[in-house]
Length: 81
Image 1 (cartoon, one colour):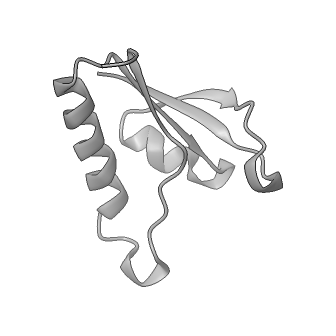
Image 2 (cartoon, helix red, strand yellow):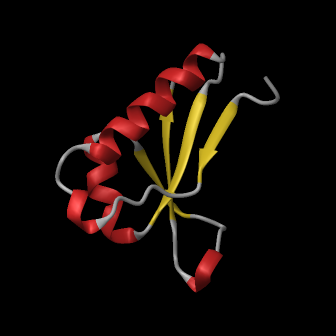
Image 3 (cartoon, helix red, strand yellow):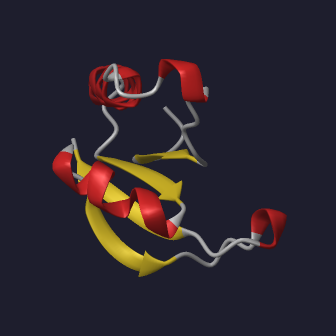
């Protein structure tokens, strides 16, 4: 264990597989794994249009991230493990 937090830069599901709960499962599995690794928080960055989806998964929107990857505006979402 290096730190108490784990960061996922983004989760992307191919359009033909969306709506099946895959992003929810990915976040769930990361959360379980990182909690088992004694991490305290999972941080995820996402595009503004995905904020509501991640909030339904229990993540909290902390506002605009300092990341400017790809010239996009990203939100920083967190969940305590």
